[in-house]
Amino acid sequence: MTDSIAGSASNWSNLRFSVYQANVTAPQGDACSDAGVRRGWNVLAGVKVAADSNYGSMTFGLKANNETTSSGYKTYKNDARLTIVYNRPPNKPTGVKLSSPSVACASGTSRPKIASTTPTLTAVVTDPDGGTVQAHFQIVQAGTSTEVWNSGTLAGKASGSSFSATVSAGKLVNGQSYQYRVTATDGSKWSGWSTALCEFTVDTSKPVAPVITPVRTGVAAIYDEDVERGGVGFAGKFTLSRGTSTDVKSFSYAFNSTTLSSTVVPDASGNAVISFTPTAAGATTLTARSVDEAGNTSETTYKFDVGAAKEDGIWMLDEGDGASAADTSGVGTARSLTVSGAAWTEGPHALFGSRPSDQALDFDGSDDFASTGPIIDAKDSFVVSAYVWLNAEKLTTGTYTAVSQDGVAQSGFHLSYLPSCTGTTTGCWSFGMKNADATGAASTTVTSSVPVVGDQWVHLVGAHDLTTKSVKLWVCEIGTPSAPGAGSPVASSSARSATPWSATGAFVLGRGLADGVSTNWWPGRIDNVRVFSGEILSEGKIRRMCQGAEAQDFTTGLDALDPTTENGE
Picture (cartoon, rainbow, N blue to C red):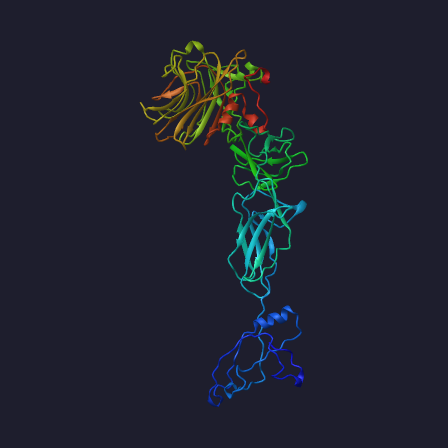
């Protein structure tokens, strides 16, 4: 680079070269045979001086290394040019945020809470010259310049690329607030820190789990925990509560699903009410989750039973006289029982004062019975339920059947008392099914260890479960008004491998059928007989039936009266 040219006064004698740049050695060919060949040299140092000194112009000179000999002679065209390649610093990164968890940049009172000590930071880096860029993330304690973590300078990418870095474990502390930022380089120059002020607070503490309580007023059904209530189409409600905690921002919930897709926000008192209308009977689980601002969660499960569909046959036996007992199920054509010889007497609800009008049938154990056409298809799953009373003087004298359904030679099933059973001294309650409708056919029978007490009501439930290939029996002691039972059914089960068969004869109270002969006549009382076809009842429903719930209690959604306590209270 030379002094500025001052017109004709400038010559080789007074034009100084102030910055030596470079030399180029290029042998001259004879007769200028290399004419037109361009020569170039690096003038970066001179351009830097001019730029740093804010010169308005610069002058470059070119001379031979020996101006006194013709060997250095040369001529030049007038198209010399100066080529400058600029390198500007990268732009300050933009789009600075957390990508995991996904949280936008915010600060101060808008500073978000995150449930992670290893979040991922993201930013976009661009270079005005379009070169390769690198990012460098940093986290400092909020309100200070104390660094707690940095990513180091990340590998280069094209301008406009997104960069991400995950904070190393053990760097961030629960309850602390932090600021994050990012700078960029092109390998030569740095952009400076990102302009946006981005902060977050680490919150990894779980919120309180929701408390679930059924709403008890203004609803069709009250779905208490671990009991059977209501039924299909009977709406209920639940209150989800965070109590005195202020950390819970929302509740998510679902019925019978692990995907909690429904969300509600608690009111000022910390409660939210959700509705539930069952579309299917049986065991139901409500799962509710508390969610705090950071996304931490705590779950609660609440289990209850929705009342099953209506019975296929209901004989309440409340007529009190006459030779007919109505089927009140309302399913299909009513199938009244024809009463043969049995007398009418007081039923268990009347005895315990919960329903004074309750009546029952009393069988003499010789030839009394009540029957109607076939009710149950024993090839399928089914349940039969009855309250029975066995006369005490008959406990050791024989086998007695309370409920059965005839085949040609055998009862398809029989709910009975057996006088001799393994492990008991007073006989036992049993539920059995013949393995074939043939003379001498064997039975698959399940018996109960619950002691048999004469002259007292007991609730029996027998079931054939086609899915599990088993027969089941539940026995619930009712006791007496002065010594009521606990109202808790005791279950027994036995496997049944025999091929199910249909008994197409009469549905009978008071006797069974064996080898084509009516037998095992019942000496005692029977009441409130119910049949469920094609299904197995939940334990909750059986428990409520044992405690006195009648058929209408399941369809109205109301709490049932309990005959094991006086006046149902």
